[in-house]
Amino acid sequence: MTTEFQAFDLHPALMQAVDELGYESPTPIQERAIPVLMSGRDVLGQAQTGTGKTAAFALPMLHGLQTDEARGRVQGLVVAPTRELAIQVAKAVYEYGQHRGVRVLAVYGGQSYSQQISRLQRGVDIVIGTPGRMLDLIRKNVLDLSAVRYLVLDEADEMLSMGFIEDIEAILSETPPTRQTALFSATLPEPIRRLADRYMSAPEAITINPKRLTVAETEQRYYIVNEEDKLAALTRLLETEEMTSALIFVRTKVRAAELADALLARGIQTEALHGDLSQPARETVMNRFRRGQVTVLVATDVAARGLDIDDVSHVINYDLPFDPEIYVHRIGRTGRAGKSGIALMLATPRERRRLQEIEAFTMQPITRAKLPSAADILARRDAQFLLKMGGQLENASGNERALVAQMVAAGYSVEDVAAAAIRLARAQEQQRPIEEIREVPARPQRHAKFEEKPDRYPARPPRRKGEREPGMVRLWLNVGAAHGIRPRDIVGAIAGETGIPGRAIGAIEIQPQQTFVDVAERHAGQVLHKMKHWKVRGRVVVLKASD
Ligand code: AMP
Image (cartoon, rainbow, N blue to C red):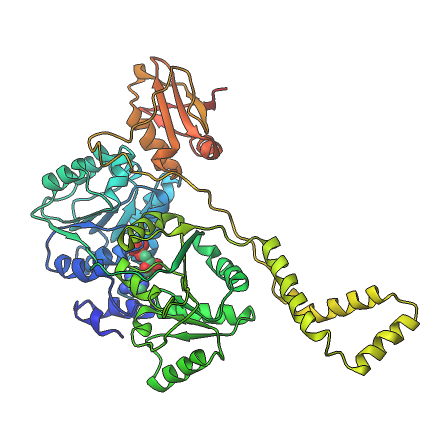
């Protein structure tokens, strides 16, 4: 159990969950926001995914949950821009609240109404969802927000750029004015500030400003991978990097133990260092690493604090640190004493913004690199093998030579014999299959224009009538201005129902009886499939590829 989380005085059932998840200490946003939220005040937090913001708002919400007559009515509400985020937050809230017996429901477009409605009728404590679907459920009189005591707007700037601001206002007006409100956003453009002014009461603004530290001249690289591919990516890196020792950082002690086990299972000698180890056990692990008996050490930041290890060739950020200052501490363990060090980071696509934040903080370039391919690994294995064999050429014993001669006498060529010997010698490599990794495409940075023009959606390049944006396909809808359709209905419905990001929706041309909308090519199939039963003002919308 951590002492720092204890300082918050959270309900014991929540402490148990935090402990089981392996959290060792609160992240900076948690340290700042939890006490303020626990005191009942509103919070305007500037924090992105990956900073631990979900627990920052969820733990106080769960702590304040009433278990008496309010039970079963919706007390907590989280509004999120996408289906993906709604699911992720619901999962986290459920995990944090599981020992408190909390009933959590995620509502988002694309899911059947009947299931959501029956869950709501059976009683739910916390609802997490996208604005469009929430409003639909409110209008169907199945989502009653009159008992909401705690409301969170998550990734508010993202909701703004997707055209959800009016929906959010409509949702807010369904909740009691006495509710507590927390708003989290990576940026705070003017419309978000206005929203905060109108709907929050004297919110405490929380921004995390890390202390500036200097960074050693270390080669820094990052890789974008999906969470489920991180292990495969790490394995490839460990196999191809010129590495003498690697210190791998993860978020929690549970992850440290799991990762060390997974690497061991892949034949990589690894130890884990985390806050739960006794002092003698820590010493043993550190000594083995220092002496080079193990080359890979997985650690949490807390465990590494007292780590007296001078120099490692690689620091690998398997999980991004919660704040840039920690990143600097982490990578300070490589590149010491004039030696060249390498710092690598595995970031998920949602963590791109945090990467930039870290880069800006360190004021040193961190370059995106490509993971070694399966062919690279095989080539590396061949090269390593040849190197090893080269070392043995002089050492062959008389007996070994006699065996070769015996095979040659039996009619095999020397090449055949050598090839068979290589096959046998490399048999154990077959036990190290190269796991598949899904490629994550590069994409332009979002929001770049946004902060300069806070009142408008991101500017799009001028387009001549009928001309399609590159990378987009055009869809046709059988409704138009005459049916009261507006651009934000389209953006809201498509983004809400399919979960695709707002920027994947391009130009929208509304004509009196029909509408054309451009959608990123790779999402078009999904949009056509998911929007089959879309209705606008009671009318079924037909959606087709237009050319
Ligand atoms: P979030 O920014 O809320 O999406 O959280 C990012 C990740 O950090 C999630 O996988 C959380 O489980 C994890 N996390 C949140 N708080 C902590 C903490 N105090 N210690 C370790 N991991 C945490």
